[in-house]
Picture 1 (spheres, rainbow, N blue to C red):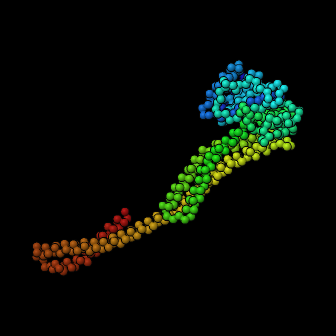
Picture 2: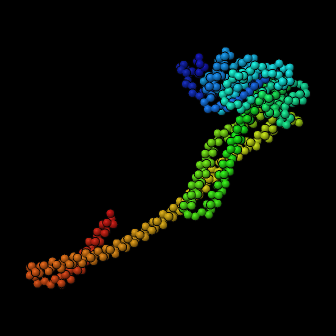
Picture 3: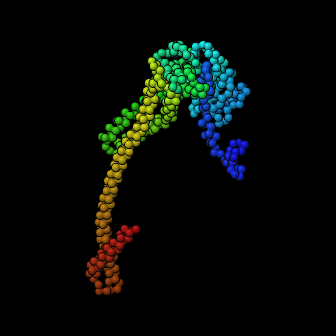
Length: 436
């Protein structure tokens, strides 16, 4: 069962707790609904890049505009909103990095395409743009059963594209040029479309032009970082050649420092451009998706939208993709070269450590030999002094106690015993120090 808010309740009447993102997820499928339109009708479509911090003032401006028309404004989390304006309809949409305003209204239908003055629209002197203008389009939906030459007369023949859409029930014409008002022009000729098909076709054509424009923002960025990528590639080649001929720890350490510097340059450039390049590829995929959705077929004697955009946009998008691939390839090559050089430096350090240990072992051995030599000398010296003391004691005893002792004989007999005793004592002391 449902409560007043439309949420399901269980058998006890308790409402289920909704997920915090439930409304956003469910509303996304209806975020950009097609409008039901019939010819003749004019569409003005603008896309503005949203600068940092400008989305909230733009939402406030649009809410005030809605109230001025006697309508409610968008909610705090709304990403699109439609409001009546004058004799037409104004639609506001918030995208990830740009905001679009679209307005459409009926035309009289008596004049040729783009010859009729646009009725009062919301983009006058009082309109506040949320950011720099990127896309400006005037599209018209008309019925025309006459000569095609009348339709194409106002377009540039060098870039004119004419496609049959939706099994020939519509024609889509454009030259991707700006008119005197700075707008691109798109003409949709209704040859039996339903109101829903007409609205969907016009919206998809507007999206193709919008996303086409934003996808090309990656090209200037690729051209900007291109010289840095080429510089790093050349330096990597020089370092790789130096690695082949390098010898010595200090030289290899310097090469490793150079590789680290180049790796930092690559990662910084990649991080700086990753969003723009990723967005360009995403927008290009959307353009291709929209071109597939309009089910276009080529009009004999004219370029189709798909073929023209592939010929003109393809090199730019491929430049972006190649730049991304070069950055990724450079990062991998630098990582491999740095790993190789680190291995070489580690081996050289280990070799130096081995030589140092060998030198220390040699010094320790020599010190041991010197210690053993000193030990022998110390035994002899101590024995000499001890024997001398024994001699003095024997002489003193003979004089004091009047014993019939020969000091020289006693002293001579004491020598081997003293030497052995001193040797044993010194040896034990050395053994005790060795254990500790």
